[in-house]
Amino acid sequence: MSDLLEQVLENGENARLAWEINLPSLPVPHISQFHLWLKIHEGNVAVLQWAFQQAGRRHAARPMSFDHCVRWASAAMKRCPARMNPALSKAA
Image 1 (cartoon, rainbow, N blue to C red):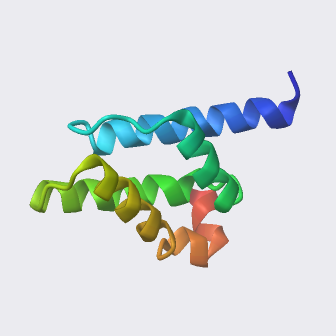
Image 2 (image 1 turned 180 degrees about the vertical axis):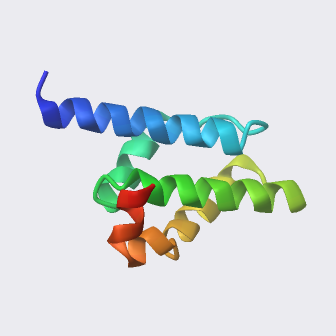
């Protein structure tokens, strides 16, 4: 297996785990959703992890449906500090 493919699979698994930790009461999206998010954010798992943390906080305060949570997390990724400053994602 190529190194790039292994990295993509590992990043997808790390993102899935971050969802499960931060949003344990909601089902886990299909792996293709994680791969789409990673493609959009250039493989930066820190962006996804940050968004899932924010979604977990929001969901704890005001519960969301699964679909709403997926959309909310997608929107949160656009305002992630690691996205604005790539040096932050390297520290994560």
